[in-house]
Length: 101
Image (cartoon, rainbow, N blue to C red):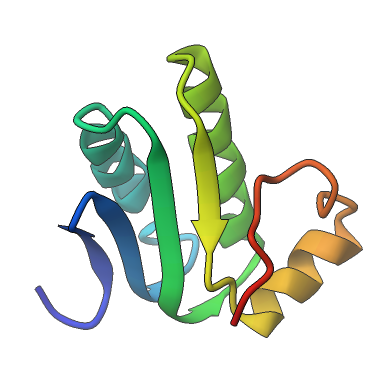
């Protein structure tokens, strides 16, 4: 794997690199496959270096998928640029985020 993508480390989904329109569908599918193997889902965004609104769409799609499977999901180490997008879109009270850096 290069610097972009998803890996599973110690039952934590780790998202690295850049999320943009061209790769968001692939990342979504990879994340769903990993989520199927987990009961409680933690997604670590510490390695996320850049994203636009497609990254927010990715997170909300994963939340919907987790809820459809009656699984708990939480996002950790959300970069400040992603926190800004979440707040601007009014989703800071909706997305299950641990606001830690």
